[in-house]
Image 1 (tube, rainbow, N blue to C red):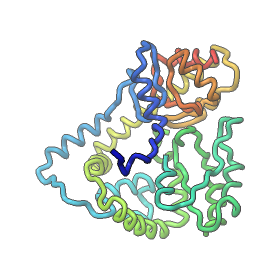
Image 2 (cartoon, helix red, strand yellow):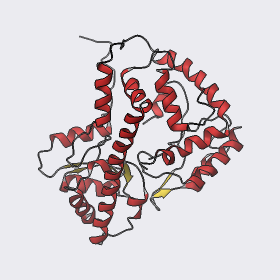
Image 3 (tube, one colour):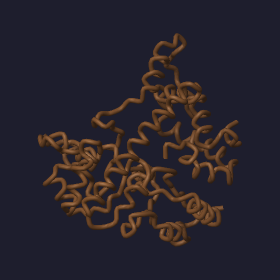
Length: 321
């Protein structure tokens, strides 16, 4: 029978989830998934932070736990602890994203960021993107503060200052302090504006989701506000960060030892879980089909998908193409 929905077009599959589904269906023994967007341990298994498990147990056993609505702006202890972590203890503020904006009527534009020639930041292109022609008065610039996904390329502190200078003219690691530097620098230049923006975000939140989820916020709040749990969390972060750094180092060393054509300094220069390898779509295709290594067509890999067991195998695959 005729249905109102007969003419609804089938949506294309999500690139990352489709990649994972293809990987799971592959029966090849040495297959590797480098498209995963979550941390994995050296055995390729998801790793729930021990401190998170500990916090969850405490919350479950809390006799005062209820499931009442949170304030529109969220769980206050969570919010205050997050602000303190990101913006610093002495900050006065303490007393794939495009569809989010398109769906509420914004016109979105891309700004220059990644330079495939240098496999690094295109700082000149980025600054030029903030000019009047490309970013009209009143534009909102969305920036990734650290461990840029998908490129793994972050601006240096000096480059962040250049970005902030241009925006002010136009629009007016396992190290927590280092990772939060860019956000703090921007907010410190106009902390009063942050308070005003928060009030507007509360209005948007009420209209979009009405009330924020509580469970995850309670876990984070407990971890950040309990000194012992916080220190354990920092240690957990270092465990993940150091493993990812080691995978970068070992991949780089393997490529150099194989005398793989090209320069590979970007592998260790980049930061965070993701890396733009510089591989071309045709090379990626060969790596998928011949070596059963799954990564996105633009050459992005998740360093968390590498391990002591497969990093040499992946390096040989790259060397072959």
